[in-house]
Length: 215
Image 1: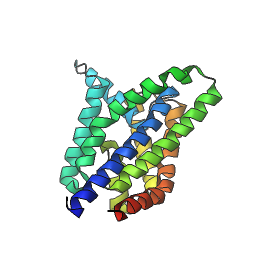
Image 2: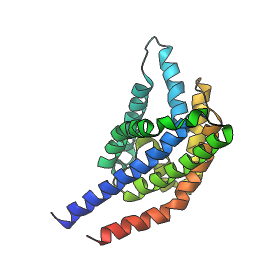
Image 3: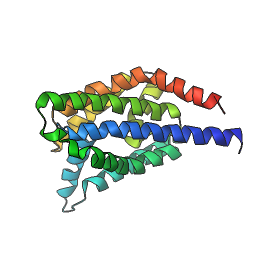
């Protein structure tokens, strides 16, 4: 196996590790039952819009279609962002959440007192941000919804944390205007994940570098 192939495998493994960490955070976020994440608020609103035409798509179907649309746009804007890891993120996120939900669902987080739910929510957002930073710094690909902020940040030179907040706020507002629902967890997620992910980027980049140096 060539060094280039080994590097590609290591990067993909690091991406998958980051994906697992990130979706542990997503699961904790969802189990707190304090609102959907910003991207899924937009998906809710788009689903309601499509349903007005007489169609009845599932939430997952709309989510997949929007992700495919983002990928198609990026293929015209800058196809270098669309990698194998992008597809891995798109198809593996749901099953990972299902596994963690099965493992953690019995903890009764949704019926806990509000302070406990808020603590779990904030912990989940932090874990999500850490995992996201590892996925991004693996440079093996990033999930379509996260790529929106990554591409805008790279092309504009603006800080990732600020761009992530702006894109999350856009997702929430557009989803809300279309009829989607959000909660306090949505707001916390929108303003917390981006800055924490930006803070974790140097750590994740260093971890990737150390792993590659061992080849």
